[in-house]
Length: 300
Image 1 (tube, helix red, strand yellow):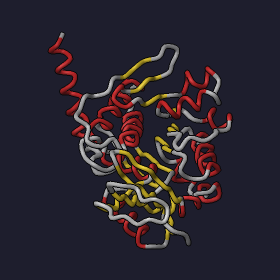
Image 2 (cartoon, one colour):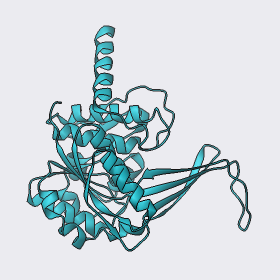
Image 3 (tube, rainbow, N blue to C red):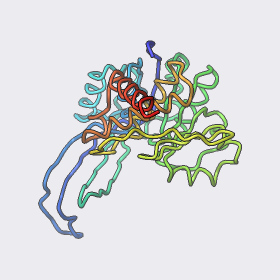
Image 4 (cartoon, one colour):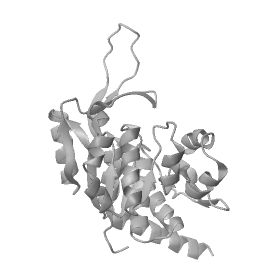
């Protein structure tokens, strides 16, 4: 893969506020936590960072608040080589995820804040940016009307659309028909099945299954195996997969090869703590694939 596909991401930009603790306080109680971290997040921003590190020309469309979090996140995205000229500060708080981690589990409160301003009218004003890209990536952490408008603009201009349906919500039939690839995890897929007919599922769905790889639902289901690694943190692995899938498809790879590329990106991303921290560079992904192919030939 030598070229640099043009990818536009329309989606959420958050600051993750993470508290590690040995015990969750009861209502009205105060306890002392172990550690606090602030990490750039939001599924939209995560997928933009993943695609940029893998060599794509990435433009982000979204909103941040007119606050210090917004300034920090904009600078962070710029440092990753992402064009943020279409990310606008609005009179609201920057999106946040309040994450409490305890006993190897977590609970999360997401406050969308500025992400709720990515409306149909906001997206319409970015029409030229969407029309000019090779691949459009979306998620569901912004208003559905904004997603629908972005998809409609993309299809008017023959742009390939990837929708990562998270967090899962009911999707209109018209929207599903316009999407080229849906990338749910197994939980999200089980809910989608109830809302999509069999033919729609066959044509569009790529199911991410963690350590069991991904399944492509075509006339015959194909499984693309995962790469074996000693995972440290799986946060952001799905976002890394989506970024990798988009870059590979935009570079002209087949769907199966693009899923393999995405799997490698996802596997490498789990070797470090944090959603964006461990997202790999293109050469790391290509090296992992080459090593795996050599090992496969050697076994034969």
